[in-house]
Length: 469
Image (cartoon, rainbow, N blue to C red):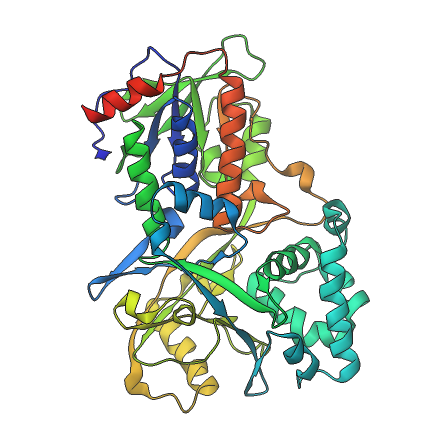
């Protein structure tokens, strides 16, 4: 399935496409383009596919490196799961969320929970309900993009609700002041989460794959193989070669890998925008500058592996600003522990601004600080139940989109002919998750196919014969 860097170069008798990045977006792209008969090569510099959706081997099982969600309303993800033959490993579960406030845990799920939420008075609870209803009725993403999130929330919910409910949720996502954050971030979240509610009990339905997101990654890779896709691991791209052939901003001619240039008719990058900027020295300065100024938050996300359940909640939001991690995400309140070796998995995330001092902390420093506050939150939890504390980090995770800057989102079709970008920056105003990334992959594939419509494609029968060989 996965070929070595010295595998033969693509057959040039049909249009060939290179995809840089073997995460879920890159593989979904390869799958959709290969279905249309295009000759595809996927390049991944790591020794494993998946990107942020990869796994940790632990005690004989696969554990998600970072936590991921698939909602019952995520149709793009569920379509891929069905098409790649792993729907029998998909399980739906009713999940719960709560709040930690003043040393106590409170449920925050049903209309009854909202009506009785002790940190708020009756009038504040009523205004919270209005905010949730208002978000479902509002359909104008442009209007949400022009409003500061704090102004929008305070105007509808009031200052008290903002401090107790919305501010902790914003703190969980942004490692800075939220003055430049548009209302879109909470509006999109409310619309996405309410789409999973079922019945008069308003239960939130999520689903998970046995083996984690990587089960879909493997299935996509296998489906790509059957369609003739060439997947190359441990292959770093040194440069996307751009020639001045009369096109206004030049044209992609191939990839420089070591001392070799491999020709391609089109190149699609799923890398984070600043990383792509470093690979296109031949592109116009304005294109490289646009990509370079895209901002991202990183994440510091320790994983606690426990012997016993910690809370009844999938997500426990934290209102206490003195606690460094911003939520307690107990994924085994969604995933059956039997599917992760009987362990209980708790993630303690903290999103980080590029200049955060926490980026330089050692694993020992993180453990000491995180566990100090963990014990304060859960003083009755037995120390003997803590099996492991594994620190996970990633530099480029969550794109930042300040108010009124949608014009700065790079287009899928970059000005360089034959060069495309498909990454998390472009899902806005949707949230960054597997659903939005795979939806973007389908949209990108449609644009690429439209541009290559005049170039020959492989015949499906022939593609199947080649795979059989």
